[in-house]
Length: 214
Ligand SMILES: Cc1cc2nc3c(=O)[nH]c(=O)nc-3n(C[C@H](O)[C@H](O)[C@H](O)COP(=O)(O)O)c2cc1C
Image 1: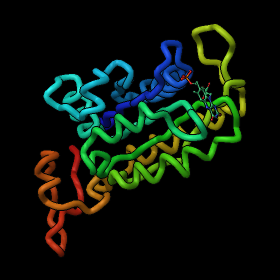
Image 2 (image 1 turned 135 degrees about the vertical axis):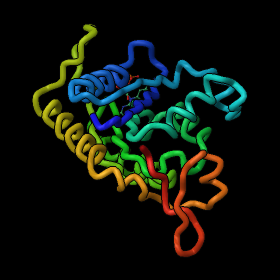
Image 3 (image 1 turned 135 degrees about the horizontal axis):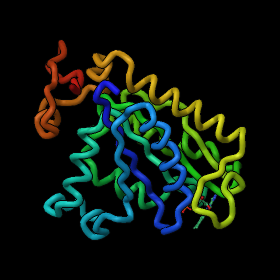
C-alpha cells in the first residue's frame, strides 16, 4: 500500500514467545492490506555487538538500516518487572538518537497482569518521543489469559482482538496519511541528518525539520 514499509521489532528472549506471536498476528492484518512488512527479533542479533553498539557487525548495521528505512515501526515487548524488557532497551540504546524521526510507531506488549498495562505509556512512549517519532499511536497490551496454553496460534479474547484491530487501524491510518507528514518529527541538527543519510530540510534556525521518505 503506497510503498509503505513496516518493520516490527520484537524483544522477547523466549523461543516460544507470546510477544512474537502477537506481532505475527498484527503483521498478518497489515499484509492483507498490501503493506510491506518485516519482522526483526532482537534475540537473533549478536548479543555482544548489540551491547557494544558495534555497527561493524553486519547484522547490527542491517538492524539500524532497516529501522531508518521503515515508514512505520511496531515495537513489541514482554513486560518484565513492571516495565519493558532490557533486551529492548539495549536495542533502542544501540540506535542513533533520532532513528525514529518522522515515523509512526505502534507499541505492543504482552504481560502476566493487566496491572502493568500502563508501562507502555509511562515507560516506552517517552523513549520513542526522544528518538524523534512523529506519531506514537494507541498501544495494545495482551495479557497471558489472551493466549491459549500450548498451541502455536494466537487466540485472543474478543475484547482484546477488537482492541488490537483498533490499534492496527489507527496505525495504518497514520502510516498512509498524507506522506508529507513524514517531514515532521523532532527537529534535529544537520550533522544527524547527514549521518542518517536523510534529505533534511533546513528550518528557519538552520536545523533540519525532518526527513521526507519516498
Ligand atoms: C522475569 C519476568 C518478569 C516478569 N514480570 C512481569 C511483570 O512485572 N508484570 C507482568 O504483567 N508480567 C510479568 N511477567 C510475565 C510476562 O510479561 C508475560 O508472561 C509475557 O507474555 C512473556 O512474553 P514472551 O512469551 O514473549 O516472553 C514477567 C515474566 C518474567 C519471565
